[in-house]
Length: 83
View (cartoon, one colour):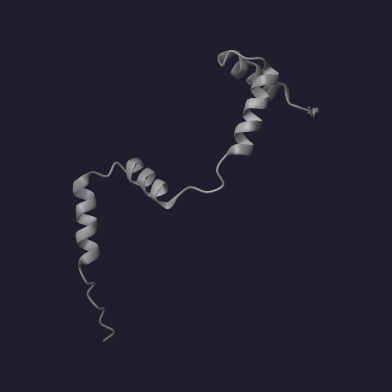
């Protein structure tokens, strides 16, 4: 199995990794493997429906808000006057 050596790791980063590993009940090396595996397996894109759902949830939209937005989208915009 391949091995990687990381040089010049800051003391703060090393301490944080050791603490995170202890919280997750694994060795520092196993924790680093887990972090790297998750980073490599991370999805490259998010489906639009998921992004919109998260946006609505973060904005704390309710059903009434969505209904109002849908109604607004059905209403034609008033043309502007250039005179």
